[in-house]
Length: 198
Image 1 (cartoon, helix red, strand yellow):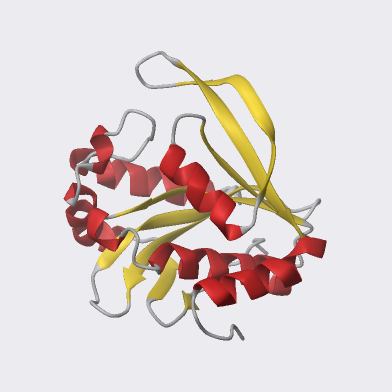
Image 2: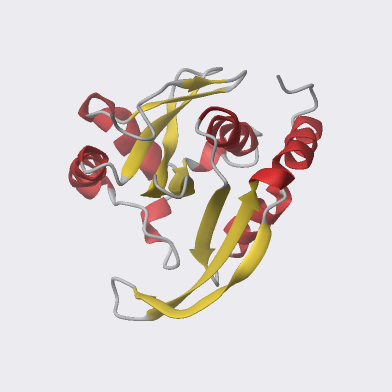
């Protein structure tokens, strides 16, 4: 049996559903909102690459290396972006939350906070993870601030960690939340969401 198994995670404004080729149109439309694929420090798929990206993520899912989600905005019904549990390490009960992007109009709306809450709650309370990791480009200040705002702590920087599509070496900042920190992070996220989290 796959770990983590496919699941739909729902909140007040966000729904995370197993990625599907049926979501292609919505994802293609979403990625054009804000020209996200043009940002040099991210690897958001271009509209014409979206079908291949869905195929890639689903192949990793079949290999039990990733659980990919399409993010829906429950208030508007539109596709808001993509996220994943990735770098799945079942024997050590660890996952990374990553390969995440949101359409521009969904950014700074609370959607990301609720998505991260849903993913973290499932990881710690259902999957019994010992740690959840986050990674981002050193120069992606928006992403770094968002990760730190969740309550994740910086583990370090992997220097010259990856070669970008344009051949430039990327330094990767690594963050994590460990199981013993989850109760405090859970309360913190509840405060950010301005409601009790259950």
